Length: 332
Image (cartoon, rainbow, N blue to C red; front, top):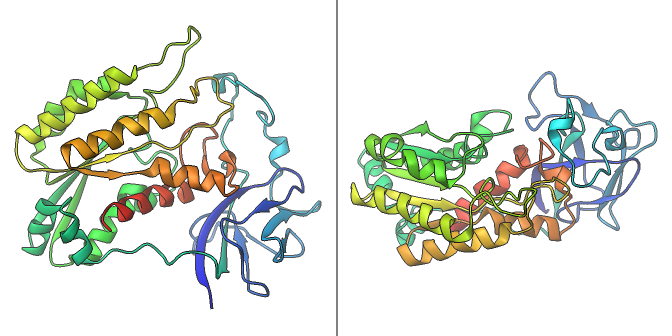
């Protein structure tokens, strides 16, 4: 019996074969639907052999010519390079994305953490103390549109919602309250300008800081929204402002990769992620390395379209799951 994988996302173009993240078990049931949550009445459930076929030998899946699954070749931006999304009335992948459940014997064990893992890591000392004592702990989510929950179908499926639910399940005697102070379209320049008012003033027990996606954007003159040096300074300023006010737990979040065909993709996201990793080591704070998890998905054959619901830079529900797994691995 293999591990059950739930909600892996795919966007199919024509009848091309796409690889599963992990090889499915031959003869097992593979289910495909239009929404992450299988209990939603509006979710369309597709039929194997009619709407899609699975090659269990090669570990691939494809839509059939007669499939009810939307063909991404009909997307107005399909095959367009260096696209400007503002030129399109609809640039989303929402109508083309499906979610797949299957079993795999090659998938690693599901990433789970125990209270001993969290306490040994030392990254969440304050929030754990409060939850263990049966008190309310405040978790401030800070960052750009990805941290607002951008493109997650509901808050509980956004990366911070998944992470919060894991903490609640480990420490049910306490209460964890999420306060989301992220702003769509913001870079670290905006983050440093309001950190005192929107984070420090709340006296949070836990803060996750997720920037880099907008900072890495490249413009027509070749400049980035934020240079690597300024990115470093801005994040340092946020960390030090929060630390100066108390012993708040801080987790830095690296960004995913944007669509490489988007006109503002610089190709330098790994360098911005490296800055975040370095600051985590220097300040001895947690780093949820979503970028590392994301690039592993791409290396395994996942397409950008299958991970980005807005087709630009916002994860779909499966993409937010990838983000949340980076939080759990930080604690192991």
